[in-house]
Length: 125
Image 1 (spheres, one colour):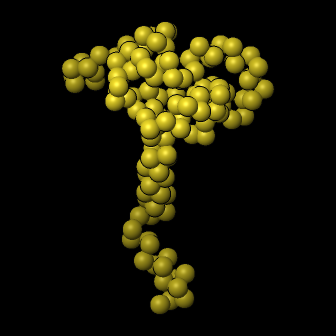
Image 2 (cartoon, rainbow, N blue to C red):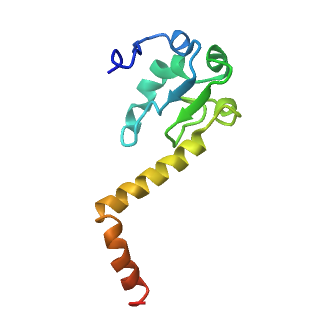
């Protein structure tokens, strides 16, 4: 797919090299929900990958910071980055909300079912 679109996919281990000139920097929690018992073991492994001001300075000056939320401040991202003007995490969360509402509507049968649902809720009006 990358070749077809004249793009290149690189897998890098060095976070500073990975964000060099990047337009967007995206991170996630280092410990997923339900795996909290691994946090002590994972913390030192993921510490070098924390998105902080120094890392963001390697990205393009117009770069945005993204996170799927909820974020663990001070772990995968610093307060200064997530609260910065470069952060679009709340816009990202709002967009995800609308996409999830659309998916829920589809799973409930689409717009065709909303009219009968409204009639039921409004007492047949």
